[in-house]
Length: 104
Image 1 (spheres, one colour):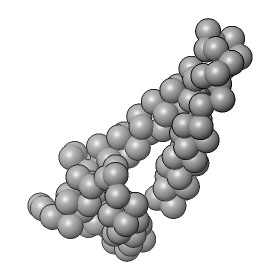
Image 2 (spheres, one colour):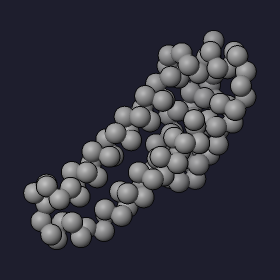
Image 3 (cartoon, rainbow, N blue to C red):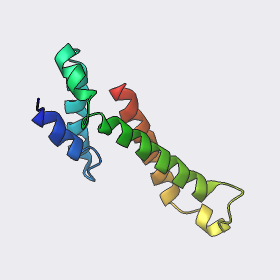
Image 4 (cartoon, helix red, strand yellow):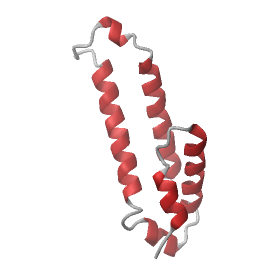
């Protein structure tokens, strides 16, 4: 069985444009909220289940990246710790956590 809408949404889940990411999130959340046994069976099977693995791995990678940049035990210089990208990284991680919360 095929599910083109969900398949295309998966491809754009980590798109750089906020509007695209929001549209994808809305599509995925609406599909998950259908609570139909056929839909549930389909999205919990390969390849669709890979979306959840991808989300978890993306969160893990971002947490490791932020930890390595801002861990006091790391060998980062004081100037690197003042890097404004730190706030952006943390904000992206928070957005990804919110996305994951919406999906669950």
